[in-house]
Length: 234
Image (cartoon, rainbow, N blue to C red; front, side, top):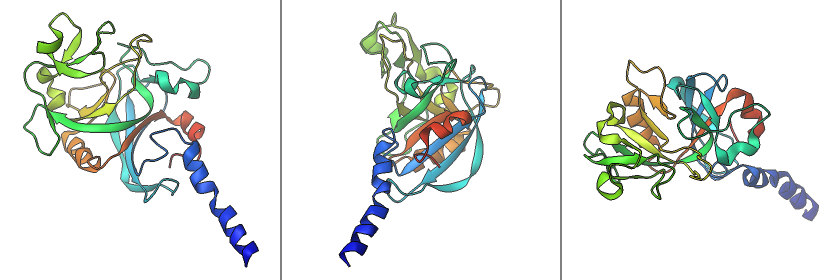
C-alpha cells in the first residue's frame, strides 16, 4: 500500500512542477487572453479566451478564436521576454508601433465613456499616458496637471479608441527605451493597425472587462514561438 501511494505521488508531481517552470504571471493564471499572429511583421492577429480551475491544470477554450488588430508594424519581443527570442527577431523599443510579445497581467478597466463598473479609470480632460523616457512618470497614466505639457505623452481623453479599454501591467525600462502605454482598446472601422496595443470591437472589449474583473493575463505571441512555452499555453 505504501508503494502504491508513492507511485501516485510521483505521477502527480509534474503538474505543480510544470506550473512553476512557466513564466509569471502565466504560471499562476486561471484566465487567459491569448493573442497570436502569423509572424512579427503582420498587424492582423486572432484572440481566444481560456480558463482553468487551478494552475497546472489544462486550459479550456471559451468559444472560438476572433480577429484582433495589433501594432501597425506587427510585434516585437518585450525587453523582459527577450530571452525567448531567436536570431533576427525584433525586440520592442519606444515608438516602434509594435505590440510587445510576452505575458502580462491585465489591469483595471478604463475609458472616456462613463464608468460601467467598480475600479474603473474614467479618462477625463488632462489624463495622459507618459511616453517620455526622460520622465519619472514614464509608462504611467497621470494628468497634465502633474507632468506638464512639455512631457511627451498620449492625451488619452482625446482618443476615440479609448472609449473602453483595459490597462496592461506592462513592465518596462526607460533606460532601455522598452516601450510604454500598452492597452487593450476599441477597434474603429477605419483602423488598420495600432500604436502597439491590441484592438477589438467595443462589445468584445466590454466583454473582456467582465472576463478580467477577477484577474486574467494577456499573452501576445507569434505562432512560431508558442512551442517555446511548451506546457504553459493551450
